[in-house]
Amino acid sequence: MSNDGEQAPRGPSRRGVLGGGTGTAVLPPVYPGAARAEAPLPAGPDLALNVNGEARRLALDPRTTLIDALREHLGLTGAKKGCDHGQCGACTVLADGRRILACLTLAAAAQGRAITTIEGLAGPGAALHPMQAAFIEADAFQCGYCTPGQILSAVALVNEGHAGSADEIREHMSGNLCRCAAYPHIVAAIMSAAPAMARG
Amino acid sequence: MRAFDYVRAADPRQALAAAARPDRVARYLAGGTTLIDLMKLDVEGPARLVDVNALATRFGAVEATPKGLRLGALARMSEAEAHPEVRRDYPLIADSLRLAASPQLRNMASLGGNVLQRTRCAYFRDVSFAACNKRDPGSGCAALEGVNRRHAVLGVSEACIATYPGDLGQALTALDAEVEILGPAGPRMMAFEGLHRAPAATPHIETALAPGELITGFFVPAGPWTRRSLYLKVRDRASFDFALAAAAVALDLEDGVVRQARIALGGVATRPWRSRVAEARLAGRRLDQASAGAAAEAAFAGAVTHGGNDYKPELGRRTLVRALMAAQAMEV
Image 1: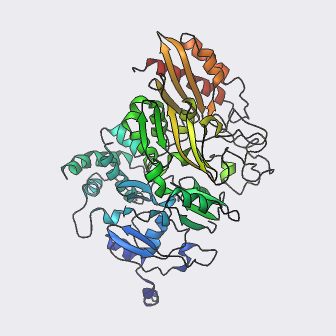
Image 2 (image 1 turned 30 degrees about the vertical axis):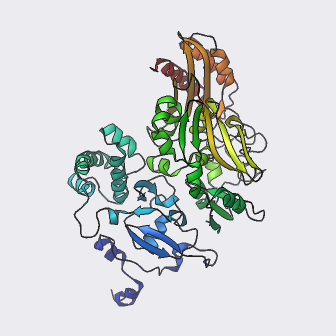
Image 3 (image 1 turned 120 degrees about the vertical axis):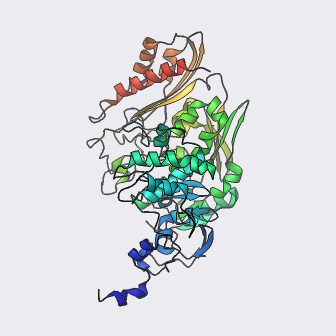
């Protein structure tokens, strides 16, 4: 642990960020390897992203996906990088209220859209969103890695009007895999959160 | 991922101009669900991406008129699927969209990009396999002797047996849709059935689009068959999977007799596969298990299998028969 003092200037630790929870902490873009640049970073114009209601400006390699921009450059590590190929749903975020996959979205192409991550679902200091509370109540996760994507997908599912039955929920949650197989509890959580969301 | 420059087009003229640079291979970017995936795999390596999403204001609408259905190429799959008139009057189209991909992908993918989705052949997607005529013309086809359980049995060649992966394409070809294209020489229209090419000796040439051309929309003509139409998709898992076999059918029936049948097959062919031989077997006949079976026999008469996919002609025949009987039973 004698290295702690040397590591501190590099920014918050992974544990510190995870422990912080609400994601209001902002990591400076200090990791030069994050963009996996094989060529020098282009000196192009900055990107303007709107994330959780805040306008953010970033200078990024055009190859940077939204998931990497969120996690590596904005310190919002709630959205997870799972398969990185659009097959698992761990990176699910909302764009203008619709669920999308941040791993197949270029950060540059996300400009002009209101992005919501799990950190912005309830807002800092606010009570949990009904879907977050329902996931805890129903014990709808084990390892938790897929959970932010599950919750955002579930919120969108309810808003789309697809929470009519357990079968309908299963069909419309098919884009979110859970390798712990918490599926029965996830369905139960969504069924209990849907009326609470309707009550607002 | 290889380096590229990213250009946002504000209007069609800017899009065409940005894509026209002869020194840089350009790709149009809409939802990105296929393209970004393949760029990460190093299967695609364009030097320039032209983001056309802003063109949705011009080419993003879904409109039903007495003459037919206009689908803007930049409408998202989920938008077209949720459109009430698409659901009521063109259930085959709504089915093909609803049964495709996942909700997140359907929110992202544009209709124009969807029909251009590239094959899921593992030998195409994994660049560590040297032999793929589609990726590297002349290099051979690893699937012929490889694991080919999911590969095509119709429209195949000795150069390629990769399956066309989409679903909407079968609906559009069955319904005689036209595709609207904008290119450097102006707009043009062509039959959707002519958009995709069978691999023959040049599997790397997948469509009839010229370099720089952009799909702007589709037109599906109205007809007495569109309401009695459906898409049946058979897959390994119940949701979020590609078809092992699929059938797009649309029927115009009078007292149980087929006036016109429109049939396309998916999951079994190298391109959206219109089966006019099967349609001809049904025209003027009473639709029952026997006539549907005869049509299905005709549809797969030319099937060529490669071991792992020996089951596909039988699965495809049964899928088509079941789809025809289900369409007959629809209340319209």
